[in-house]
Image (cartoon, rainbow, N blue to C red; front, side, top):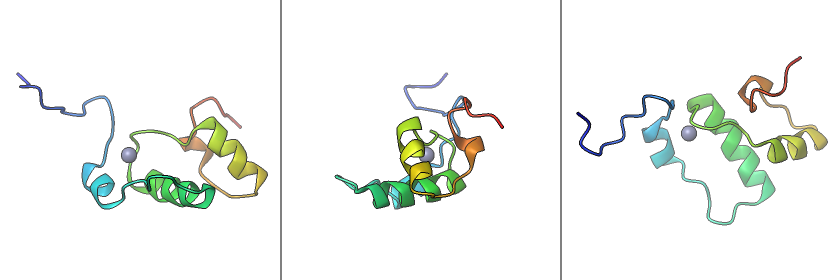
Length: 74
Ligand SMILES: [Zn+2]
């Protein structure tokens, strides 16, 4: 049995990457974008939020739509 230890069977979390790349406390838009772009290359625990994705698109920042909330299809 799992004695309270999170095994991450349903989520693909790259724990070591997260430990090395904590999100800044009060991230600016640029910091968030930078973090998420690196994040999605290294970890799949969560997608870029729709809100941030919209802001990124508005500024012409490229990202992998596949990593988006699954609601965006070509
Ligand atoms: Zn992650």
